[in-house]
Image (cartoon, rainbow, N blue to C red; front, side, top):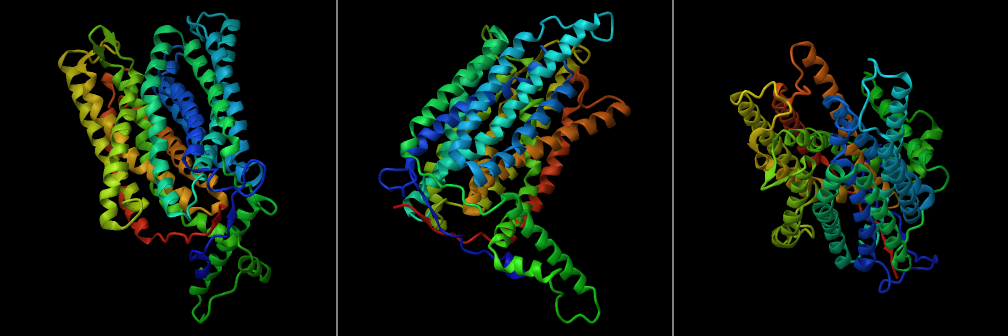
Length: 549
């Protein structure tokens, strides 16, 4: 059983071109092909971020939801969007391949964004007060329009589930890890992938948010639909330059992974029972000869244990995702109460998220071009520091960010109290929005270390033929973290509402987001301690061979 947990070398994979012939190194892959894949990823992230950035404002504005309900809805949607890649990556790795999955997901994206545009037309600007004197038919129409909006929204989540893990894995596939130069380029690819996505969003998403709030929601949802169609066209133009790794599974993919996991658990339980027997000098066998044969004679136990040993790292990073989730919900709501004037221009609250992207644009080149070469001289590691070290630094920065957010909220509440604005939720707090800059910058800096490190780690440590799943596991951290955040918000809201005033009151001046942030800081510290423990015990996998002629 212990031998099954040791790393084994991966079987070789062969890259092919678009016609199924062995891929030629000089005319395929590398940066020319990867940049085209980055192009469709930029379009996809623009569409996704353009919706997410103002979703909280749209739900509490045109859809008329409460602050806590809207935050829970955003977290639930984010959770679904980041967990669905587990399904999308399984379909890609088992049946369709990454290229076809990206094309199919892009078409689904375009459909969902088109429906979202239509739904914004249907939502009435003057919402009736259902449950009062409004006509039943009018309220029924409103409910139907809101339902259509959510169907459209979750269709985008399904498309994202197939697109993001497969596009990024397909991009990384363009570099041969057995070639030292291409391996170093692959490590840089994850940095510049992140840079390109957030660089585009830094410029375009604030403009889109302004269009949504100041021009029309219909145009603000329609523009991402057009961008996604253009991105798909660019992606398809590069088909002749890509390196493809056709899916290679014998039988059902889920059964291949699930069967050895069940066999491993049976063996572990049998071994545990054997230790409790007084006269047991040898470990008990597996539950049956057939199970033992299956566990030892196939390569499936290797794939199962390769996934199982990633679980502690996955689990200890969940609180990081919970912390980052607040930047899309409560950070935006906080910013909406502050003085956001720059001259005669009022900055949309959602556009504060540009600071997150801007900090990534600043720190990623510094990390890749300055920190990595300097660190490489001392560590002899091609990435400067190990992936696990990089993730740990990001987790530590997220704790500092949460503490800063709590202190800023304390100041906001103090100013509201000093100016007698506690019961004036619509009034602008005489406090500059610039006070929130540090927490947004720290979110970006944490992502430079933790998020990019997690992407590379899960891509690198899963079996070679399951690399879409590896990136889906990374995305599922955000998905599970957002569901946990949604549950925490609901639970805290219920408890605090019953004992006085909700921490998430619709009137934020009477709420206590600072208490929530302090709680997250404490949980993050515990998560970091657990992460450091498991990271020290982690054993990396042995590399296989990937053939590129």
